[in-house]
Image (cartoon, rainbow, N blue to C red; front, side, top):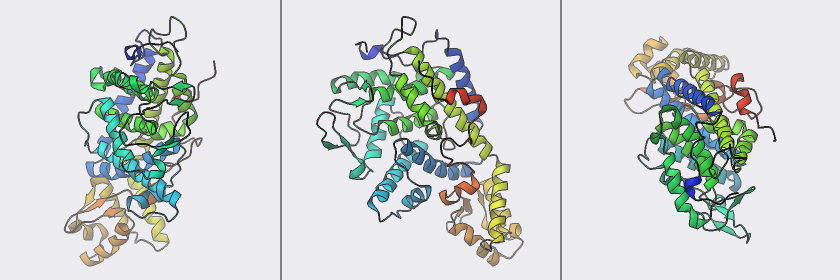
Length: 411
């Protein structure tokens, strides 16, 4: 690879590149379709579904790293109900850490930080919550197992596949250059391309001894929110994990140096970066469309009715609660005073009939407050079909995006 300073690390594909117009089109589609997603639901329902999506996001992001935590274990971890087996328990703690960090992003608790500082803070928050067994890495050259310190940059040589990360003495300059990828520095369409490119560039800089992939995916979520495109309702991590071979291949190819004089004058290939941005934007658009199909209020209300009907047939719920549950979906909550009218029974019986919904986590209650809609992970597959579908299952993938989501062909 050619030797050059951080200024030669391009942050966007060149507008002269043939792929640029296609990238702009994808960015406009993503911005347009994501903008209407949250507007279909009341804020209380958005918050409830956001809890579910954070659990899904942590599972998919950790799965890319080879850490498979079952949804039921994630839900138990969030209730501090940890497994006796040390390995499962540590994965639960990892999942809870990921959920906590994304929750901070979704609450806008990390405002104003430039991208590099935000990445460092995300790493600090995540690793401060990890068990010791998952906060260590093998040191290159010595084979020693060393602790990964929260929020601190790597201090030795780091190699990922064929890529040697910048040395510790170069990291500060590269991260200053990376800060120029802040979305607000670009126009409406360019900023989404910049978020896609920044995902690769952070992984190329590889500032931390471990955890770079999860930090990059959390940072992408945060930057998409800054663009007004990301939301608690969808996660690019699901799209990346469901097409993980294409994701890894596109990342590795974007590490390549320029392939001739027409492939940019920077440190890395312009065309390969454009390929990665196309994949990242397509994966994002794919997930927005998938969640849009799930989150239609009519469809979501219908699945609530189906759940109640199935449980009523087994004697586990009273079928009359369907009207109250659907009301909670549409309006985010159901006033206690409205329950007798919705269920067609007296006040005391209405409270009794609603208790199984509270016990299962479908509704949340507080003293003298309306019952609020919730989205427990344990009910997620019934209410949100195929949310946890493994890679290779043809669910949530728009045929129009298929070519962009396939692994690139070898040269």
